[in-house]
Image 1 (cartoon, rainbow over the protein chains, first blue to last red):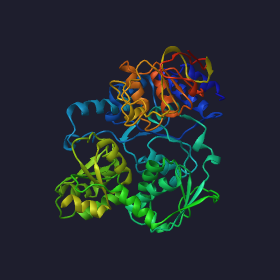
Image 2: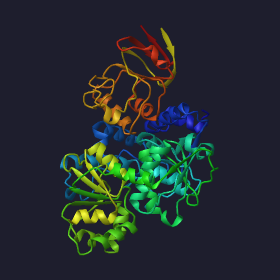
Image 3: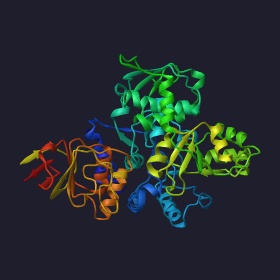
Image 4: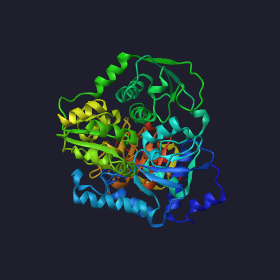
Length: 392
Length: 129
Protein backbone atom coordinates (compact mmCIF):
# COMPACT_ATOMS: atom_id res chain seq x y z
CA UNK A 1 0.00 0.00 0.00
CA UNK A 2 1.29 3.49 -0.91
CA UNK A 3 1.51 5.85 2.06
CA UNK A 4 1.98 9.61 1.83
CA UNK A 5 4.83 11.28 3.72
CA UNK A 6 2.38 12.41 6.40
CA UNK A 7 0.90 8.92 6.75
CA UNK A 8 4.39 7.44 7.12
CA UNK A 9 5.08 9.88 9.93
CA UNK A 10 1.82 8.98 11.60
CA UNK A 11 2.74 5.29 11.40
CA UNK A 12 6.18 5.90 12.88
CA UNK A 13 4.65 7.46 15.98
CA UNK A 14 5.68 11.06 15.29
CA UNK A 15 2.11 12.20 15.94
CA UNK A 16 1.89 10.21 19.16
CA UNK A 17 1.43 6.64 20.29
CA UNK A 18 -2.34 6.46 19.71
CA UNK A 19 -2.00 7.68 16.14
CA UNK A 20 0.88 5.23 15.59
CA UNK A 21 -1.19 2.27 16.86
CA UNK A 22 -4.13 3.47 14.78
CA UNK A 23 -2.02 3.54 11.61
CA UNK A 24 -0.73 0.03 12.42
CA UNK A 25 -4.34 -1.20 12.47
CA UNK A 26 -5.34 0.63 9.27
CA UNK A 27 -2.27 -0.34 7.24
CA UNK A 28 -2.49 -4.00 8.33
CA UNK A 29 -6.16 -4.13 7.28
CA UNK A 30 -5.32 -2.34 4.03
CA UNK A 31 -2.56 -4.84 3.22
CA UNK A 32 -4.82 -7.78 4.10
CA UNK A 33 -7.56 -6.67 1.76
CA UNK A 34 -5.35 -5.39 -1.05
CA UNK A 35 -6.07 -1.67 -0.63
CA UNK A 36 -3.81 0.59 -2.69
CA UNK A 37 -4.10 3.61 -0.42
CA UNK A 38 -5.75 5.25 2.55
CA UNK A 39 -8.62 7.67 1.91
CA UNK A 40 -10.08 10.47 4.04
CA UNK A 41 -13.35 9.85 5.89
CA UNK A 42 -16.02 12.44 6.77
CA UNK A 43 -17.29 10.84 9.96
CA UNK A 44 -16.89 7.88 12.31
CA UNK A 45 -19.29 5.80 14.41
CA UNK A 46 -17.65 3.69 17.14
CA UNK A 47 -19.11 0.42 18.48
CA UNK A 48 -17.85 -1.41 21.54
CA UNK A 49 -19.07 1.10 24.15
CA UNK A 50 -20.93 -1.06 26.66
CA UNK A 51 -18.71 -2.04 29.58
CA UNK A 52 -20.54 -5.37 29.46
CA UNK A 53 -18.67 -6.11 26.19
CA UNK A 54 -15.42 -4.23 26.83
CA UNK A 55 -14.61 -5.42 30.35
CA UNK A 56 -11.55 -4.23 32.26
CA UNK A 57 -8.97 -4.66 29.49
CA UNK A 58 -11.17 -2.98 26.88
CA UNK A 59 -11.45 0.01 29.20
CA UNK A 60 -7.69 -0.06 29.70
CA UNK A 61 -7.16 -0.01 25.91
CA UNK A 62 -9.46 3.00 25.55
CA UNK A 63 -7.71 4.87 28.36
CA UNK A 64 -4.36 4.15 26.69
CA UNK A 65 -5.60 5.50 23.34
CA UNK A 66 -7.10 8.56 25.11
CA UNK A 67 -3.70 9.51 26.61
CA UNK A 68 -2.57 11.26 23.44
CA UNK A 69 -5.26 10.48 20.85
CA UNK A 70 -7.69 13.16 19.59
CA UNK A 71 -10.35 12.66 16.92
CA UNK A 72 -9.71 14.29 13.55
CA UNK A 73 -13.29 13.94 12.24
CA UNK A 74 -16.82 14.09 13.68
CA UNK A 75 -17.24 10.91 15.74
CA UNK A 76 -20.24 9.47 17.57
CA UNK A 77 -20.75 6.43 19.83
CA UNK A 78 -22.87 3.29 19.88
CA UNK A 79 -25.22 2.57 22.80
CA UNK A 80 -23.69 2.08 26.25
CA UNK A 81 -24.72 -0.52 28.82
CA UNK A 82 -27.03 1.91 30.62
CA UNK A 83 -28.81 5.28 30.60
CA UNK A 84 -25.83 7.49 31.48
CA UNK A 85 -27.85 9.58 33.94
CA UNK A 86 -30.86 7.58 35.08
CA UNK A 87 -29.18 4.18 35.26
CA UNK A 88 -30.68 3.37 38.64
CA UNK A 89 -34.21 3.22 37.24
CA UNK A 90 -33.03 0.50 34.83
CA UNK A 91 -31.72 -1.64 37.70
CA UNK A 92 -28.01 -1.19 36.90
CA UNK A 93 -25.47 -1.83 39.71
CA UNK A 94 -23.24 0.95 41.12
CA UNK A 95 -20.12 -0.97 40.16
CA UNK A 96 -21.19 -1.37 36.54
CA UNK A 97 -22.22 2.29 36.35
CA UNK A 98 -18.85 3.46 37.64
CA UNK A 99 -16.98 1.41 35.01
CA UNK A 100 -19.36 2.44 32.23
CA UNK A 101 -18.84 6.13 33.04
CA UNK A 102 -15.06 5.62 32.86
CA UNK A 103 -15.50 4.26 29.33
CA UNK A 104 -17.48 7.36 28.37
CA UNK A 105 -14.85 9.62 29.98
CA UNK A 106 -12.11 8.01 27.87
CA UNK A 107 -14.07 8.66 24.67
CA UNK A 108 -14.84 12.22 25.78
CA UNK A 109 -11.11 12.80 26.33
CA UNK A 110 -10.48 11.77 22.72
CA UNK A 111 -13.01 14.42 21.61
CA UNK A 112 -15.75 11.97 20.67
CA UNK A 113 -19.32 13.29 20.89
CA UNK A 114 -20.57 11.00 23.63
CA UNK A 115 -24.07 10.57 22.33
CA UNK A 116 -24.64 6.86 22.64
CA UNK A 117 -26.87 5.67 19.84
CA UNK A 118 -27.05 3.13 17.04
CA UNK A 119 -28.87 5.75 14.93
CA UNK A 120 -26.25 8.50 14.53
CA UNK A 121 -28.02 9.48 11.30
CA UNK A 122 -31.02 10.67 13.38
CA UNK A 123 -28.98 13.01 15.58
CA UNK A 124 -26.74 14.98 13.24
CA UNK A 125 -24.13 12.43 12.11
CA UNK A 126 -25.78 11.97 8.75
CA UNK A 127 -23.46 11.67 5.76
CA UNK A 128 -24.35 12.85 2.26
CA UNK A 129 -24.71 10.48 -0.67
CA UNK A 130 -21.23 9.57 -1.94
CA UNK A 131 -19.41 10.44 1.31
CA UNK A 132 -16.76 8.00 2.54
CA UNK A 133 -17.13 7.24 6.25
CA UNK A 134 -15.82 4.63 8.74
CA UNK A 135 -18.71 3.28 10.77
CA UNK A 136 -19.17 0.32 13.04
CA UNK A 137 -22.62 -0.83 14.26
CA UNK A 138 -23.90 -3.19 11.59
CA UNK A 139 -27.41 -1.69 11.34
CA UNK A 140 -26.09 1.85 10.90
CA UNK A 141 -23.52 0.65 8.34
CA UNK A 142 -26.28 -1.00 6.34
CA UNK A 143 -28.51 2.10 6.59
CA UNK A 144 -25.68 4.47 5.61
CA UNK A 145 -24.62 2.40 2.58
CA UNK A 146 -28.08 1.43 1.38
CA UNK A 147 -30.49 4.24 2.31
CA UNK A 148 -28.16 7.26 2.40
CA UNK A 149 -25.77 6.10 -0.34
CA UNK A 150 -22.61 6.72 1.71
CA UNK A 151 -19.57 4.38 1.51
CA UNK A 152 -18.43 2.38 4.52
CA UNK A 153 -17.12 -1.05 5.41
CA UNK A 154 -18.37 -2.82 8.54
CA UNK A 155 -15.78 -1.59 11.01
CA UNK A 156 -15.08 -3.08 14.42
CA UNK A 157 -14.61 -0.92 17.51
CA UNK A 158 -10.80 -0.57 17.36
CA UNK A 159 -10.64 0.04 13.59
CA UNK A 160 -13.30 2.75 13.91
CA UNK A 161 -11.26 4.37 16.70
CA UNK A 162 -8.21 4.15 14.41
CA UNK A 163 -10.13 6.02 11.68
CA UNK A 164 -11.37 8.62 14.18
CA UNK A 165 -7.83 9.40 15.41
CA UNK A 166 -6.35 9.59 11.89
CA UNK A 167 -9.32 10.66 9.71
CA UNK A 168 -8.47 7.81 7.34
CA UNK A 169 -9.51 4.33 6.23
CA UNK A 170 -8.00 1.85 3.75
CA UNK A 171 -9.74 1.88 0.36
CA UNK A 172 -11.23 -1.56 -0.20
CA UNK A 173 -14.55 -3.41 -0.10
CA UNK A 174 -17.58 -1.15 0.19
CA UNK A 175 -15.50 1.96 -0.65
CA UNK A 176 -15.18 0.78 -4.27
CA UNK A 177 -18.15 0.97 -6.67
CA UNK A 178 -17.30 -2.35 -8.31
CA UNK A 179 -17.97 -4.15 -5.03
CA UNK A 180 -21.37 -2.53 -4.51
CA UNK A 181 -23.29 -4.13 -7.38
CA UNK A 182 -26.21 -6.47 -6.70
CA UNK A 183 -25.42 -10.17 -7.14
CA UNK A 184 -28.94 -11.56 -6.79
CA UNK A 185 -32.44 -10.28 -7.50
CA UNK A 186 -34.83 -10.98 -4.61
CA UNK A 187 -38.35 -10.95 -6.04
CA UNK A 188 -40.75 -10.26 -3.20
CA UNK A 189 -44.24 -11.55 -3.88
CA UNK A 190 -45.22 -11.22 -0.20
CA UNK A 191 -46.99 -8.13 1.12
CA UNK A 192 -44.36 -6.13 3.05
CA UNK A 193 -45.96 -3.36 5.04
CA UNK A 194 -45.61 -3.52 8.84
CA UNK A 195 -42.42 -3.36 10.94
CA UNK A 196 -42.56 -7.10 11.55
CA UNK A 197 -43.02 -7.75 7.81
CA UNK A 198 -39.80 -5.82 7.21
CA UNK A 199 -37.98 -7.59 10.04
CA UNK A 200 -39.09 -10.98 8.75
CA UNK A 201 -38.00 -10.00 5.22
CA UNK A 202 -34.45 -9.41 6.50
CA UNK A 203 -34.43 -12.89 8.01
CA UNK A 204 -35.98 -14.49 4.90
CA UNK A 205 -33.39 -12.90 2.61
CA UNK A 206 -30.62 -14.22 4.83
CA UNK A 207 -32.11 -17.70 4.45
CA UNK A 208 -32.64 -17.51 0.68
CA UNK A 209 -29.84 -15.35 -0.70
CA UNK A 210 -27.10 -15.74 1.92
CA UNK A 211 -24.42 -13.04 1.87
CA UNK A 212 -24.96 -11.90 -1.73
CA UNK A 213 -25.84 -8.22 -2.20
CA UNK A 214 -29.53 -8.25 -3.14
CA UNK A 215 -31.57 -6.08 -5.47
CA UNK A 216 -34.99 -6.37 -3.85
CA UNK A 217 -37.94 -5.91 -6.19
CA UNK A 218 -41.70 -5.93 -5.67
CA UNK A 219 -41.70 -3.42 -2.79
CA UNK A 220 -44.32 -0.66 -2.69
CA UNK A 221 -42.49 2.65 -2.16
CA UNK A 222 -45.14 4.00 0.26
CA UNK A 223 -44.46 1.03 2.56
CA UNK A 224 -40.74 1.76 2.74
CA UNK A 225 -40.40 4.87 4.91
CA UNK A 226 -37.17 5.56 6.80
CA UNK A 227 -38.35 4.00 10.08
CA UNK A 228 -39.08 0.74 8.29
CA UNK A 229 -35.80 0.82 6.36
CA UNK A 230 -34.07 1.44 9.71
CA UNK A 231 -35.51 -1.73 11.24
CA UNK A 232 -34.98 -3.67 7.99
CA UNK A 233 -31.31 -2.60 7.85
CA UNK A 234 -30.84 -3.99 11.35
CA UNK A 235 -32.50 -7.29 10.46
CA UNK A 236 -30.71 -7.93 7.17
CA UNK A 237 -27.34 -6.98 8.73
CA UNK A 238 -28.00 -9.47 11.54
CA UNK A 239 -29.38 -12.41 9.58
CA UNK A 240 -27.61 -12.03 6.22
CA UNK A 241 -24.41 -10.33 7.44
CA UNK A 242 -24.87 -7.69 4.74
CA UNK A 243 -23.44 -4.16 4.65
CA UNK A 244 -25.50 -3.10 1.59
CA UNK A 245 -28.77 -3.83 -0.16
CA UNK A 246 -30.68 -2.24 -3.01
CA UNK A 247 -34.46 -1.85 -3.26
CA UNK A 248 -35.83 -1.09 -6.72
CA UNK A 249 -37.48 2.34 -6.83
CA UNK A 250 -36.55 3.09 -3.20
CA UNK A 251 -32.78 3.21 -2.49
CA UNK A 252 -30.44 5.72 -4.22
CA UNK A 253 -27.52 3.54 -5.41
CA UNK A 254 -27.42 2.43 -9.02
CA UNK A 255 -26.97 -1.24 -9.84
CA UNK A 256 -27.47 -3.50 -12.84
CA UNK A 257 -30.09 -6.26 -12.76
CA UNK A 258 -28.33 -9.49 -11.69
CA UNK A 259 -28.88 -12.67 -13.70
CA UNK A 260 -29.53 -14.84 -10.61
CA UNK A 261 -32.84 -14.48 -8.84
CA UNK A 262 -34.74 -15.94 -5.86
CA UNK A 263 -38.30 -15.35 -4.69
CA UNK A 264 -39.55 -14.46 -1.22
CA UNK A 265 -43.18 -15.55 -0.89
CA UNK A 266 -45.85 -14.86 1.72
CA UNK A 267 -45.11 -18.35 3.06
CA UNK A 268 -41.40 -17.44 3.52
CA UNK A 269 -42.40 -14.37 5.53
CA UNK A 270 -44.76 -16.45 7.69
CA UNK A 271 -41.98 -19.02 8.24
CA UNK A 272 -39.56 -16.30 9.33
CA UNK A 273 -42.13 -14.85 11.74
CA UNK A 274 -42.67 -18.31 13.16
CA UNK A 275 -38.90 -18.72 13.64
CA UNK A 276 -38.72 -15.38 15.45
CA UNK A 277 -41.50 -16.38 17.91
CA UNK A 278 -40.81 -19.00 20.57
CA UNK A 279 -42.04 -17.56 23.90
CA UNK A 280 -45.29 -18.40 25.61
CA UNK A 281 -45.15 -15.56 28.07
CA UNK A 282 -43.16 -12.36 28.43
CA UNK A 283 -41.80 -10.43 31.42
CA UNK A 284 -40.10 -7.63 29.48
CA UNK A 285 -41.23 -5.62 26.47
CA UNK A 286 -38.66 -3.55 24.58
CA UNK A 287 -38.80 -1.45 21.43
CA UNK A 288 -36.24 0.83 19.82
CA UNK A 289 -33.73 -1.55 18.20
CA UNK A 290 -32.47 0.48 16.37
CA UNK A 291 -33.27 3.49 18.57
CA UNK A 292 -36.72 5.05 18.09
CA UNK A 293 -37.29 8.09 15.90
CA UNK A 294 -39.59 10.99 16.86
CA UNK A 295 -42.39 9.50 14.78
CA UNK A 296 -42.15 6.22 16.63
CA UNK A 297 -42.20 8.00 20.00
CA UNK A 298 -45.33 9.91 18.95
CA UNK A 299 -47.04 6.65 18.04
CA UNK A 300 -45.97 4.99 21.31
CA UNK A 301 -47.28 7.98 23.32
CA UNK A 302 -50.63 7.71 21.53
CA UNK A 303 -50.88 3.97 22.12
CA UNK A 304 -50.02 4.33 25.82
CA UNK A 305 -52.38 7.22 26.53
CA UNK A 306 -54.57 6.46 29.54
CA UNK A 307 -52.98 3.05 30.07
CA UNK A 308 -50.83 1.54 32.83
CA UNK A 309 -48.13 -0.99 32.04
CA UNK A 310 -47.81 -4.11 34.21
CA UNK A 311 -44.41 -5.27 33.01
CA UNK A 312 -40.95 -3.86 32.48
CA UNK A 313 -41.33 -1.85 29.25
CA UNK A 314 -38.23 -0.23 27.73
CA UNK A 315 -38.40 2.33 24.96
CA UNK A 316 -34.84 2.68 23.73
CA UNK A 317 -33.86 6.01 22.27
CA UNK A 318 -30.97 8.42 21.85
CA UNK A 319 -30.63 11.27 24.34
CA UNK A 320 -31.12 13.85 21.55
CA UNK A 321 -34.40 12.39 20.33
CA UNK A 322 -35.57 11.97 23.95
CA UNK A 323 -34.80 15.64 24.66
CA UNK A 324 -36.75 16.72 21.60
CA UNK A 325 -39.64 14.46 22.64
CA UNK A 326 -39.57 15.95 26.12
CA UNK A 327 -40.15 19.44 24.69
CA UNK A 328 -43.28 18.11 23.00
CA UNK A 329 -44.54 16.49 26.21
CA UNK A 330 -44.15 12.96 24.82
CA UNK A 331 -41.74 11.70 27.49
CA UNK A 332 -44.15 12.73 30.24
CA UNK A 333 -47.04 10.98 28.50
CA UNK A 334 -45.06 7.77 28.01
CA UNK A 335 -43.67 7.72 31.55
CA UNK A 336 -47.11 8.36 33.03
CA UNK A 337 -47.98 4.82 31.91
CA UNK A 338 -45.06 3.34 33.85
CA UNK A 339 -43.05 2.59 30.69
CA UNK A 340 -39.37 3.52 30.87
CA UNK A 341 -37.53 5.73 28.42
CA UNK A 342 -34.10 4.05 28.19
CA UNK A 343 -31.68 6.62 26.83
CA UNK A 344 -28.12 5.92 25.60
CA UNK A 345 -28.66 2.14 25.81
CA UNK A 346 -30.78 -0.75 24.59
CA UNK A 347 -31.95 -4.28 25.34
CA UNK A 348 -29.11 -5.73 23.25
CA UNK A 349 -26.18 -4.22 25.19
CA UNK A 350 -27.51 -3.65 28.74
CA UNK A 351 -26.66 -6.38 31.29
CA UNK A 352 -30.09 -8.09 31.34
CA UNK A 353 -29.13 -11.76 31.53
CA UNK A 354 -30.88 -13.53 34.38
CA UNK A 355 -33.22 -10.63 35.13
CA UNK A 356 -35.88 -11.59 32.58
CA UNK A 357 -36.98 -14.67 30.64
CA UNK A 358 -39.40 -13.67 27.90
CA UNK A 359 -38.99 -10.65 25.61
CA UNK A 360 -41.64 -9.10 23.37
CA UNK A 361 -40.19 -6.80 20.72
CA UNK A 362 -40.92 -5.46 17.24
CA UNK A 363 -37.25 -5.85 16.21
CA UNK A 364 -35.91 -8.99 14.54
CA UNK A 365 -32.38 -7.94 15.53
CA UNK A 366 -33.41 -7.69 19.20
CA UNK A 367 -34.73 -11.25 18.95
CA UNK A 368 -31.29 -12.48 17.83
CA UNK A 369 -29.37 -10.78 20.65
CA UNK A 370 -32.06 -11.48 23.23
CA UNK A 371 -31.75 -15.17 22.51
CA UNK A 372 -27.98 -15.32 22.02
CA UNK A 373 -26.78 -13.09 24.83
CA UNK A 374 -29.57 -13.15 27.39
CA UNK A 375 -31.15 -16.61 26.91
CA UNK A 376 -34.56 -14.99 26.35
CA UNK A 377 -37.49 -16.65 24.66
CA UNK A 378 -39.11 -14.14 22.32
CA UNK A 379 -42.38 -12.86 20.95
CA UNK A 380 -41.94 -10.89 17.73
CA UNK A 381 -44.90 -8.56 17.19
CA UNK A 382 -45.77 -5.07 16.01
CA UNK A 383 -45.84 -2.03 18.25
CA UNK A 384 -49.58 -2.18 18.94
CA UNK A 385 -49.25 -5.74 20.21
CA UNK A 386 -46.08 -4.91 22.19
CA UNK A 387 -48.09 -2.26 24.05
CA UNK A 388 -50.92 -4.76 24.64
CA UNK A 389 -48.40 -7.25 26.07
CA UNK A 390 -47.02 -4.57 28.37
CA UNK A 391 -50.40 -3.57 29.79
CA UNK A 392 -52.00 -7.02 30.08
CA UNK B 1 9.26 -28.49 8.03
CA UNK B 2 9.05 -24.80 7.17
CA UNK B 3 5.83 -23.18 6.01
CA UNK B 4 5.60 -19.78 4.36
CA UNK B 5 2.83 -17.29 5.06
CA UNK B 6 2.15 -13.60 5.44
CA UNK B 7 2.78 -11.34 8.42
CA UNK B 8 -0.33 -9.86 10.07
CA UNK B 9 1.40 -8.73 13.28
CA UNK B 10 5.13 -9.16 13.85
CA UNK B 11 7.16 -10.90 16.54
CA UNK B 12 9.04 -14.14 17.15
CA UNK B 13 7.77 -16.81 19.50
CA UNK B 14 7.25 -20.52 19.87
CA UNK B 15 5.10 -23.09 21.61
CA UNK B 16 2.96 -26.14 21.31
CA UNK B 17 0.46 -26.14 18.47
CA UNK B 18 -3.28 -26.33 19.20
CA UNK B 19 -4.97 -26.99 15.88
CA UNK B 20 -8.62 -26.94 14.81
CA UNK B 21 -10.47 -27.09 11.53
CA UNK B 22 -13.29 -24.98 13.07
CA UNK B 23 -13.44 -21.19 12.92
CA UNK B 24 -13.06 -19.36 16.25
CA UNK B 25 -15.30 -16.65 17.68
CA UNK B 26 -13.37 -15.01 20.49
CA UNK B 27 -16.53 -13.18 21.64
CA UNK B 28 -18.79 -15.80 23.18
CA UNK B 29 -16.58 -18.67 22.02
CA UNK B 30 -13.69 -18.27 24.48
CA UNK B 31 -13.91 -17.48 28.18
CA UNK B 32 -11.83 -14.31 28.66
CA UNK B 33 -10.98 -15.26 32.24
CA UNK B 34 -9.64 -18.76 31.64
CA UNK B 35 -8.80 -18.91 27.93
CA UNK B 36 -10.95 -22.03 27.62
CA UNK B 37 -12.94 -22.67 24.45
CA UNK B 38 -16.58 -22.64 25.56
CA UNK B 39 -18.43 -22.70 22.22
CA UNK B 40 -20.82 -25.67 22.26
CA UNK B 41 -19.83 -28.37 19.80
CA UNK B 42 -16.50 -26.72 18.92
CA UNK B 43 -13.68 -29.15 18.17
CA UNK B 44 -11.60 -27.54 20.95
CA UNK B 45 -14.44 -27.21 23.50
CA UNK B 46 -13.01 -27.38 27.03
CA UNK B 47 -9.37 -26.85 25.97
CA UNK B 48 -7.33 -23.75 26.85
CA UNK B 49 -5.71 -21.54 24.19
CA UNK B 50 -3.38 -19.93 26.77
CA UNK B 51 0.27 -19.99 25.73
CA UNK B 52 -0.44 -22.16 22.68
CA UNK B 53 0.36 -21.51 19.04
CA UNK B 54 -3.30 -21.44 18.06
CA UNK B 55 -3.98 -22.69 14.54
CA UNK B 56 -7.43 -22.25 12.95
CA UNK B 57 -8.80 -21.45 9.49
CA UNK B 58 -10.30 -18.04 10.24
CA UNK B 59 -12.05 -15.92 12.85
CA UNK B 60 -15.82 -15.46 12.98
CA UNK B 61 -18.53 -13.73 15.02
CA UNK B 62 -18.78 -10.31 16.60
CA UNK B 63 -16.12 -7.62 16.20
CA UNK B 64 -16.11 -7.35 20.01
CA UNK B 65 -13.86 -10.43 19.73
CA UNK B 66 -10.84 -8.13 19.25
CA UNK B 67 -11.37 -6.79 22.78
CA UNK B 68 -11.75 -10.32 24.16
CA UNK B 69 -8.27 -11.08 22.77
CA UNK B 70 -6.95 -7.98 24.55
CA UNK B 71 -8.59 -9.16 27.78
CA UNK B 72 -6.95 -12.60 27.39
CA UNK B 73 -3.55 -11.01 26.86
CA UNK B 74 -3.86 -8.83 29.97
CA UNK B 75 -4.80 -11.88 32.04
CA UNK B 76 -1.93 -13.95 30.64
CA UNK B 77 -4.38 -16.32 28.95
CA UNK B 78 -3.79 -15.34 25.31
CA UNK B 79 -2.28 -17.66 22.71
CA UNK B 80 1.48 -17.16 22.21
CA UNK B 81 0.88 -16.78 18.48
CA UNK B 82 -1.92 -17.26 15.94
CA UNK B 83 -1.70 -19.02 12.59
CA UNK B 84 -4.66 -18.72 10.20
CA UNK B 85 -5.41 -20.00 6.73
CA UNK B 86 -7.13 -16.69 6.03
CA UNK B 87 -7.03 -13.95 8.66
CA UNK B 88 -10.06 -11.62 8.89
CA UNK B 89 -10.50 -8.25 10.59
CA UNK B 90 -11.55 -9.40 14.08
CA UNK B 91 -8.47 -11.55 14.68
CA UNK B 92 -6.13 -9.16 12.81
CA UNK B 93 -7.20 -6.16 14.90
CA UNK B 94 -7.18 -8.29 18.06
CA UNK B 95 -3.57 -9.33 17.38
CA UNK B 96 -2.47 -5.76 16.64
CA UNK B 97 -3.94 -4.21 19.79
CA UNK B 98 -2.88 -7.15 21.97
CA UNK B 99 0.55 -7.54 20.29
CA UNK B 100 0.14 -11.25 19.53
CA UNK B 101 2.34 -12.44 16.62
CA UNK B 102 0.11 -13.56 13.75
CA UNK B 103 0.74 -15.16 10.37
CA UNK B 104 -1.82 -16.16 7.74
CA UNK B 105 -1.92 -17.74 4.27
CA UNK B 106 -0.26 -20.81 5.78
CA UNK B 107 -1.16 -24.36 4.70
CA UNK B 108 -2.54 -25.25 8.12
CA UNK B 109 -3.39 -28.83 7.11
CA UNK B 110 0.33 -29.57 7.65
CA UNK B 111 0.08 -28.68 11.35
CA UNK B 112 -1.07 -31.07 14.09
CA UNK B 113 -1.92 -30.48 17.74
CA UNK B 114 1.10 -31.12 19.97
CA UNK B 115 3.75 -30.18 17.39
CA UNK B 116 6.53 -27.84 18.57
CA UNK B 117 6.13 -24.72 16.46
CA UNK B 118 8.34 -21.65 15.99
CA UNK B 119 6.69 -18.59 14.54
CA UNK B 120 8.72 -15.80 12.92
CA UNK B 121 5.86 -13.48 12.10
CA UNK B 122 8.16 -10.68 10.87
CA UNK B 123 9.23 -12.93 8.00
CA UNK B 124 5.92 -14.78 7.79
CA UNK B 125 7.51 -18.18 8.43
CA UNK B 126 6.44 -21.13 10.60
CA UNK B 127 8.81 -23.99 11.56
CA UNK B 128 7.23 -27.17 12.94
CA UNK B 129 8.50 -30.53 14.09
